[in-house]
Length: 55
Image (cartoon, rainbow, N blue to C red; front, side, top):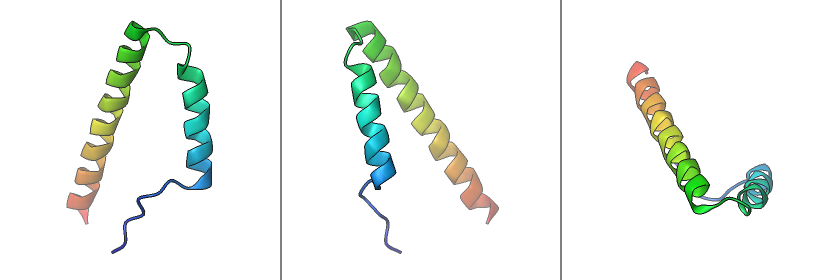
């Protein structure tokens, strides 16, 4: 199974939008955002694991 490691065009565009949005954040805001992103990635991992167990 080939797992795509590159972002598609829409993802690249969204990443650029996020980059523009975070330029103005201070250190505390950046830390909070990073922690929230990490939390969401962990939730995503949990959901994928749960779905894989279902199959």
